[in-house]
Image (cartoon, rainbow, N blue to C red; front, top):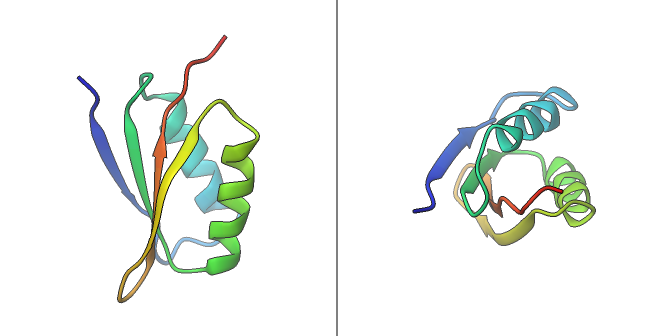
Length: 78
């Protein structure tokens, strides 16, 4: 069964927030969901671009009151 991890990176500056996201994804299993909470829309764009180049998949992007939530489904690794 897939698990969901919430990673609150509000207040964390780039590129540290992207590195933390990558590190968290590496520790997850195929099909797991990572929800990343970010404040900077430019970082969200960068994250989505990075995920599109990987086996992972962006499954949602939601604008919240104080942040942007991005859901990433962990893909399989070769």
